[in-house]
Image 1 (cartoon, rainbow, N blue to C red):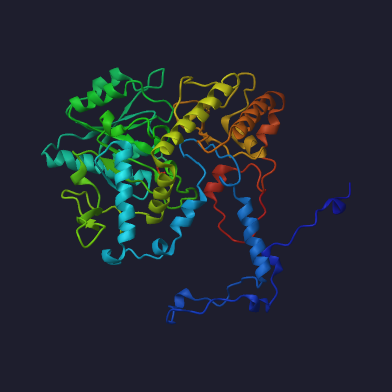
Image 2: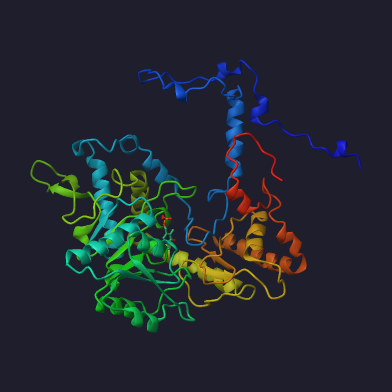
Length: 497
Ligand SMILES: *Cc1c(COP(=O)(O)O)cnc(C)c1O
């Protein structure tokens, strides 16, 4: 066949649309800062940018934005990440000029509204998890973990107990848990899980001694299950003098059901960008507040918001200010955390109220269990018991030996679904960690389940279809190793092989 005739007409990209002189159509706002000379080494004459009309620019960026996948576009069951819908009202409040235009160096007298919001949020987060105090400062879950572990270290050192050098971490923990412990200078002791996915209690008893500073445990674990022996675990660690850290990134399963502080945990971090719907992805700003019991509250990172003057006859509202906890581990961030995230989380909690908060978790857990039960006849569910807000299945089949979890994930994209988390948790072969979240309808869950079953059938009948997937995305199967090693950061379009 004549290849000339087959050639497609390629739509011009923005770089080809440029024509000298068109830049007059761009109206820049007037400069509102004094002009200064820039250092000459930062200047260049040969910047080769296309001169295009406003319409061309708008189309360019709208097209780019539509290449991205987002929760606003489709189902996003990325396990451990809680990709729930981010209500637009959160965005409205975060953009209120009184919040958005604040400067962190402003005098507290002129930021009382923001401080009141932070003070209230600190209180709610402490209350929801059953703790007595909270600091909003950490900018991510992992930084909240670091804060927690540094507090545990400071607590022991403060008591003159410097022999505690080990942190216990179950092998079902999130990868950040051992990383955090080792960053804080501790030796990480990995604990095995038993056949149910719970911590092996015998192994825990063997390790629990005076060299243990504490234990970091993810609840529910990354296997999606709630450890049946959690109270026993807490007791064993406390009895040997260690403190208990709960990784609270999975609080979406526990809101209004269990208060970790009441269970006996000493410290926990939240991921506001997971549980409380502040958007995340692409490395955007997060928030990982830490909540603690009385034992640790003087060690919180700070400053934290406190009431410096109670209401009186003249002032109906209290006066808020910044206070450094007496034995604080110090600052974790130049200012006060990612405030925009605090406004969004505040809005989300306020919109739900206490009963709504509980409904979040009940629906998240129901949705995950619905998927678990309906997929169990097609996919192997290694821990097939009541799960929390996510469920792990194995992405391989005995009668389709060439198919891996990755192939299933890539094929899901052809059906307009974001892949689940792959190859994590590490202790499950070919793991697919599926987290539907509470925001999805039954119809969406049914569509996902049907697609997963269809892909399982395709895996056996036409495995090549999976191996070459995805077929409908702008870029098909990429060589992920090469893509990471030979980054193409050029803004010019490149031909992808
Ligand atoms: C996401 C997550 C973390 C890390 O949180 P970041 O905000 O990404 O730093 C820690 N533990 C668990 C269980 C998580 O799911």
